[in-house]
Length: 246
Ligand SMILES: NC(=O)c1ccc[n+]([C@@H]2O[C@H](COP(=O)([O-])OP(=O)(O)OC[C@H]3O[C@@H](n4cnc5c(N)ncnc54)[C@H](O)[C@@H]3O)[C@@H](O)[C@H]2O)c1
Image (tube, rainbow, N blue to C red; front, side, top):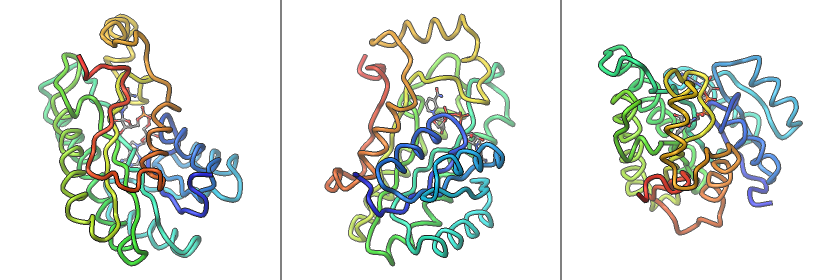
């Protein structure tokens, strides 16, 4: 039970890696608030996970939603120990020079992560510490052919905001790290990377020769969230089958 009695918030928890993370955290003893814009899917998963899980609707771009989430979490569980800033929208857009995509990427994938840190850090300071795991991507470390540059820029912003927050709040006992998944099952919003031919090329470019499983990212999130990582802050953890080692 690596998260026994810890209270965790997971964003984008109705699907993919967020759902896998919420499930693993409950199995490891945490009380988990699953959040997403997908209310039906999120509420169904929370009820499947039992009494230690609850769902609250949260659009990560809304400060009002974050305020309501913090109030609800404190009233239900009394404290906040862990935030996994996982919600995101895909950058695999066919028009790589589209301005609306740039704006959406910055709003959801970068600003959404900042708003999450902004919301929980004061509560973690009051509570004596905490752990924040920000989900970036290999796209936050390198450019790619099939990805809108706004996705790379937003995920790069997550990487460096993580390091800034780690430095600024280390003395409060708050650790902040980033996880960088590689080729994973397509996101709900994926366009190019859902195409089988594009996916075949992307898979060939992975040293391990396969895509990752959502649970493999959830385990990295668990390690960083838990006290096993008590002297680790400000780092970036690729979970990518060796992609960025090339
Ligand atoms: N799938 C990949 O190949 C891959 C690779 C690297 C990084 N990532 C990152 O991992 C994270 C999880 O992605 P996934 O693969 O599980 O995708 P997914 O599409 O299955 O899940 C993303 C979740 O985020 C939610 N979401 C989207 N916009 C939101 C908003 N404004 N507010 C709240 N929730 C919102 C969606 O409803 C969805 O449930 C994302 O940050 C993504 O950028 C994904």
